[in-house]
Amino acid sequence: MAPGGALRVLVCGDVEGRLGSLYSRVQAAQSKSGPFDLLLCVGNFFGSAQDPEWQEYQAGAKKAPIQTYVLGANNSETAQCFPDASGCELAENITYLGRKGVFSGASGLQIAYLSGTESTGGEPTPAHCFSTKDVTDLKTSLLSASKFKGVDILLTSSWPKGVEIFGNSPGDIDTKKCGSGLVSLLAASLKPRYHFAALQKVYYERLPYRNHTVLQEAAQHVSRFIALAGVGNSDKRKYLYAFSILPMSSMEPAELVKQPQDVTENPYRRPGGSKSCAHLLLDEKEEPAPQFFFDLSSKPKGRKRRPEGGEGQQPKRAPGKPPLPTAACWFCLASPEVEKHLVVSIGTHCYLALAKGGLTPDHVLILPIGHCQSMVDLASEVVEEVEQYKSALKRFFMARGKRFVAFERNYRSQHLQLQVVPVPLNCCTTEDLKEAFIVQAEEQRIELLEIPEHSALKQIVQPGTPYFYVELDNGEKLFHRIRKSFPLQFGREVLASEAILAMPGRADWRSCQAGQEEEATAAQDFRQAFEPFDLAQED
Image (cartoon, rainbow, N blue to C red):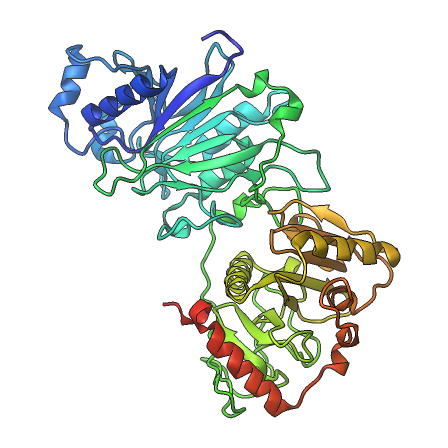
């Protein structure tokens, strides 16, 4: 391949000695799609026992059909298979990259690699493990280069801890238990365009994430994390990944920083800031969420109770947790002020309630169980559950011929209330909704900015900043930073206007209130209809 051109690359997960199966698959891929330039292997390359087939490759009786680069041992049993920590040729066309380092070919492609699993402590570090020093040394060797933008590919056997934050779920994989905080730190610093890992026997391709803060920093390239299953696994999970890549050094800047539609915020960044928070994952402790037991019958009877703590006790604020309300809060689920007859679902971190004086009969609120003022203040696990409730409500409303619209006003409010209002599909299109918000904002001299579909507010504003935002059913968001004053009913006014729901008389919630018995009946009806979609009903 000529320097400066795109490379065709194959990456595979745990080989575990199944070289015959691997190379048969590689040859099939090359027969179908043409030759590939190299094969990269992450995870366990050797099985626990020395395979006679490997001895044939060592002796030259068999030869790898493609230049293959592998990572080192992840356990003590196979450590002796890698005689030189700095890397060496294991057999013809099969090269051990080394314990850590950077591989750069004539094409300019830059591949950073880190072999092994994270050391649990103690000196010296075992041959199959990496330490904080290993990661620091690798970071320093790259970050010290002038105009460092990132690497093309990062190879690690271990998953990064927290990689799923703000992204799609990896299923049963709990990266808090199996992931490495040091790998997270490395990925946050090196900004790989592709990061590959293995060891967990599953295929997982995370949504791409950005490496800059929207509206605060110049755009940078996105990163993709891909975990691969084991070669020849019986579940037929994907273990071989093929792609073409033009080295970063050969790309035009505008092409390099293009953002795909499904890009999300960075899982390793501190919310609302441009600095990495991956170091916080190094010693992260999982804290059990408080559980609330609530009578959801239509009649307002019974009382909430906490699993511990006496009557009237003020719970202590844990370090790093949102502040407790300064006065009685109408929306904290533990507060005696909450109108429990409106509650229709309770999750682990959030709950769902009918809006008092709702714009429509199925106008609902998504609220955090504990006291948080805005979306920007929420912990990642609460954000995740908010997203789950939003998805459930989208499906629920779509099944009833309606589209989802959500908005939040973080201004002259004490507790986060994410307002979700369904709009009939035959009433207007998503573009009509967007235009209605923009037109009315212009009329009132409110600047509404469009922000990328998968951007989170934490990437745009700091906690404590007043703002208004609306999210449409296609994921588009419009955002306004409130600097002086703001019309409190703006979201309702737009949706109640003649252009949308044509019910201007319901723009103010105070003119829409019903009696408690009527509210309780409406909540019970909603609860029954929503039950097939309800998170709280899932085990």
